[in-house]
Image (spheres, rainbow, N blue to C red):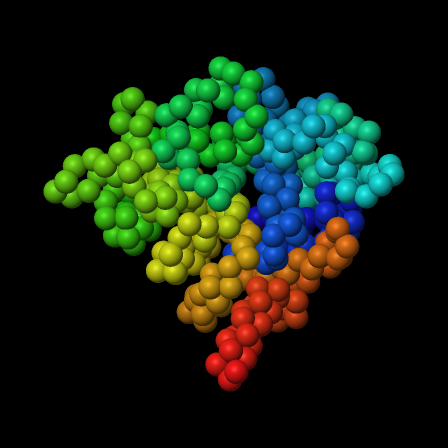
Amino acid sequence: MLKRLALDNLTLFPHARLDFAPGLNVFVGENGTGKSHLLKAAYSVIANAHEQANEPSVADPTKVLLQKGIADKLIKVFRPESLGRLASRRQGAHTCKVSVSFEQAALDTAFSFSTRSQTEVKIDRLPSAWQEKAPVFLPTRELLSQYHWLLPLYESRHVDIEEHHIDLCKLLGAPAIKGAREKAVAELVAPLEEAMGGKVVLDKNGRFYLRIPGQGNLEMPLVAEGLRKLAMLARLITTGSLLDKGYLFWDEPEANLNPKLIKLVARAAFTLSQQGIQVLIATHSYFLLKELDLLSRQYTVPQRYFALVRGEGMVEQVESADSLSGLEHLVTLDEELAQYDREMELANA
């Protein structure tokens, strides 16, 4: 499990220290406060370590491997013009420092790079083991309708696509698991399949469909986008990517979902946390936050909430609490209350 992420001079963050819960973690902030950057930074380190573990020619971690491996992953996930573009948004030369700590200390990793860095980082702490479980990054948009062409295009052409989308496609295309865990999978996907009205299937030509009882297969592009996002989640559970220990980085899961489906997403986040998945969500939806808060009284899942407070062009504070009510800076709530005040003013005019 991810325990801590410490940043100095990474994009919008002059300084940030985030201590995570082993269950559910929620980043709250308005647009442009770097929520996605936090997810991408942690994801890049974990994903690179898992990819190295699956290279036949790679044994134990070395500085040479990580110097280029981490830099490549950061560049492919963030897509800056150069690595140094991630080292602070302020004028002048700066050094970015990133430290990622885990429950298993052998995985701890720290590195740094400057605004002048191009393709390598300096390894400040070398892990002694690789990541065994692939992390999952769910972006704001669904990928099932694009799966059949996106992965082949990326593998045959130089295209400017953030690589966590490609990583996700590879996980979506994995075969469904069989055996002792099938019952657990069926229980987890049942509420998602009920909401979608069918099961997600992948044909031999690499196209996803929604198999609706009594109607046959419905092409995924014809399925509502909100339901396609649920379909991605269901597929990842079916393939075992979201079972047992692992990480789910979920960027604005509420995007393109109606309130009824947002409630289902919130419940899925807690259910996955109970299954041993560490869930990290970035959101600015007060509805989702409130639903998570209500569900927190029903689930015994360790939680941590982070409010990102923006100053003049930078994030000046990252506030944290074990509950939503413990946060003092909650811009989404401020806007909800301001809207209510405007409504009362109009009603009394």
